[in-house]
Image (cartoon, rainbow, N blue to C red):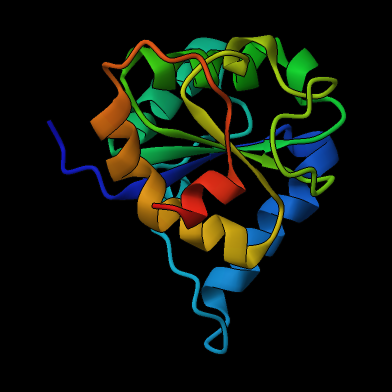
Length: 163
């Protein structure tokens, strides 16, 4: 298996691409203390690729990922073809998930959160550079420490401050 050091960003691209682009801007700005290895830079998916090919390439990216960052917007929970498929794949592969509410809600936004994330060991944070950087630093190792617990609490940014 490949060394997992990448962050896989899951986004409903048609409506939330600006937030994904903001993550890339934070990463590329020398003035910001924000670094991640983007799994989407691993392989190219051609615009004419069929769904089977796209999902195969996405799976390759996921296998190189240390965490899944889900940008949650108004339409995220309805995008089953890829977004929900990516979330379920990360769960199957036991990859820690950081749910980022682009509306800046701290904690689970029950109206927007995809059903497959509710009641799971996922940290729900507001969209901010500081919150995401901290979650990326501490959530993956904490997740693996609690993965076998049967607790059903929703983790949020304040939990991370205690870690």
